[in-house]
Amino acid sequence: MLIDTHAHINFSAYKDDGDEVVRRALKENTWLINVGSERKTSQRAVEYAQKYGRGVFAAVGLHPGSLRAQEIETKVDDQETVNFKMEAEEFDYEHYKNLAQQDMVVAIGEIGLDYYRNIAKPELQKEVLLEQLGLAECLQKPVMLHCREAHDDLLKILKTWTMVGNKPLRGVIHSFSGRWNQAEQYLNMGFYLGFNGIITFARDYDRAVKEMPLERLLLETDCPYLTPEPFRGKRNEPSYVKYVAQKVAELRGISLEEVAEATTANAKKLFGI
Ligand SMILES: [Zn+2]
View (cartoon, rainbow, N blue to C red):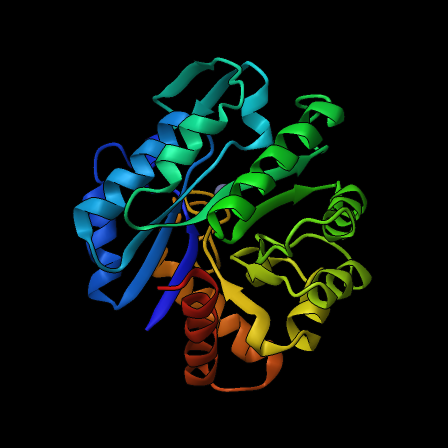
């Protein structure tokens, strides 16, 4: 069995066939964690998890991208373009605390820092991240961290976290995008690193995939995005996590079974599932 530790069946890309996609994964013995990025998608992640009861879990949180109003234009195909507006959300601790205490919620996420898309100001992002780290500490849940072009700031925040008297955090740097020496620093703090379809078509993370301890590696798809080879260009889904597992096996020179067994055990341990 495999576990897709970071999926977004709760996003509108699956509004018509989300259940089919989930069932396809479960049939292949692939479990998944749906991850929220704001109120609505967090709520929907919880609903999905509670509907299935087994094999489908949820993470709830406020993504840095949701801190600023956005107008998004997405091309569905040559015929169709979808436009939507997203209001900026202010972080409401009590709201997320309630949501995070529902059955099947296994993590706070996705939360973090994103300086790549020039979204909300770094100071606001950090402030909201710290509040959510506090929520994770309070509820003793792991964190699912998103980080783009902000690893130095994120590392600083995580290192200072315990120095100012907080309890240590557990969690994963999802879709790891840093350098090897940053990987080492996260690993030294006990964090897991998550890899997805990117490793099937980009070579930037081969060293991290090869050299990091297997007992800290998690598999994910980040679907509907980042579709692995051989399905580049199509919508991604949890059952494709096997292509990520295959690539990890190939890079490390071990069997697919060994990767499946280790990464599934890792996910079960971190998320308590
Ligand atoms: Zn994501």
